[in-house]
Length: 37
Image (cartoon, rainbow, N blue to C red; front, side):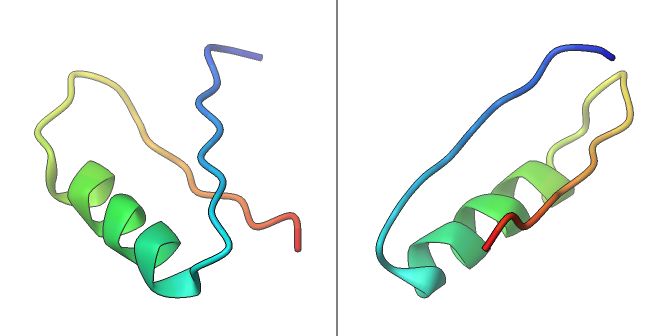
Protein backbone atom coordinates (compact mmCIF):
# COMPACT_ATOMS: atom_id res chain seq x y z
CA UNK A 1 0.00 0.00 0.00
CA UNK A 2 1.22 3.51 -0.80
CA UNK A 3 0.99 6.87 0.85
CA UNK A 4 -2.26 7.85 2.51
CA UNK A 5 -3.92 11.17 3.35
CA UNK A 6 -6.75 11.34 5.86
CA UNK A 7 -9.13 14.29 5.93
CA UNK A 8 -11.71 14.58 8.70
CA UNK A 9 -14.55 17.03 9.20
CA UNK A 10 -18.01 17.04 10.70
CA UNK A 11 -19.23 18.79 7.56
CA UNK A 12 -19.95 16.47 4.63
CA UNK A 13 -19.79 19.51 2.32
CA UNK A 14 -16.21 20.23 3.44
CA UNK A 15 -15.17 16.65 2.74
CA UNK A 16 -16.79 16.68 -0.69
CA UNK A 17 -15.03 19.97 -1.49
CA UNK A 18 -11.65 18.48 -0.56
CA UNK A 19 -12.36 15.38 -2.67
CA UNK A 20 -13.17 17.60 -5.66
CA UNK A 21 -10.01 19.69 -5.18
CA UNK A 22 -7.87 16.55 -5.04
CA UNK A 23 -9.62 14.93 -8.00
CA UNK A 24 -9.23 18.07 -10.12
CA UNK A 25 -5.51 18.43 -9.31
CA UNK A 26 -2.97 17.21 -11.87
CA UNK A 27 -0.90 14.69 -9.90
CA UNK A 28 1.61 12.22 -11.38
CA UNK A 29 -0.06 9.39 -9.46
CA UNK A 30 -3.46 7.78 -9.10
CA UNK A 31 -5.86 9.14 -6.49
CA UNK A 32 -8.52 7.05 -4.77
CA UNK A 33 -11.19 8.23 -2.32
CA UNK A 34 -12.48 5.89 0.37
CA UNK A 35 -15.37 6.64 2.69
CA UNK A 36 -15.20 4.91 6.08
CA UNK A 37 -18.47 6.29 7.48
